Image (tube, rainbow, N blue to C red; front, side):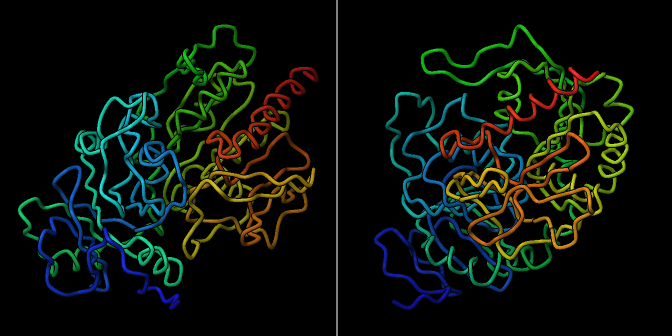
Length: 405
């Protein structure tokens, strides 16, 4: 089989891709900056969005993926074909408004078949102003991203079929891309708020934390709700502050620990205001700090470690990561396009986790402070709970700090 980025076996669902004329029945397209066009049928909002096109390999959780704020600025190609078949509901969202800019699917969306479904995916996409396209050969798109890197593109859903390919190509080519872009400022909360909702239980739904042991201040760079739920479920009273909060703003709440959330964009751009704050917080040698995803990258930069854009990033629920302290391998959920460069760590910092896919950095630990971080998402439960111990580790650090105080 020819494994080039523009070839795959014929598919009964896929429209032809290339730069030719619009096929009959096409009401949507993905137009790349180099002029390549993927045609299909539109779903969701009748609009167009520009962004970086990535792929996600998860077999479930498409609603969680689409509402993850870390996907701001991105159009998601789902490699799993049966997206939409379980519908949508109000419980599986990770933020109030979807952060992604569109989705690319292979098969048509079927009627939902799940007892938790409350709304068809198409209707939900319209409510979120998200355009989608079906009928795309997602294998070809995925190979292209794998071999050539994540392209800039525009997704358009035009029910009348009027699609100006030349104008959309120019829009894609003119888009500046994610490098140097501070998207955390776009998805963060606008004011401080409290969180006490705990994790979901069958036949019970979400619970409430009523007897807090510790107070955690969570810095919202684009926090997923389920991360906050995991903290609350362990007995933490959570105060969420905006990404731009200063160290003084955070310390004013008298936290027992500080959590640095996930989020989108370039950590070097967000770091312009986040790094001085984190350096100030780490002056307190007893304050536990735990970072995830963008929080991990920002913590690294605050420690003097560089970050860089990846060729195609890690996105999916099947990424093996090794914990170097225990030797155990976790199956993790990941979503990041930037990575920490760990080739020249400060003497007081060590690598705690590594990717078994490509050997890239997946975690850091500061040796002389209760500070650690990971690149992946322990709350997303792909293992299903391989990485939940990280929240417990954070809680234990607060236990230890309280005991020594």
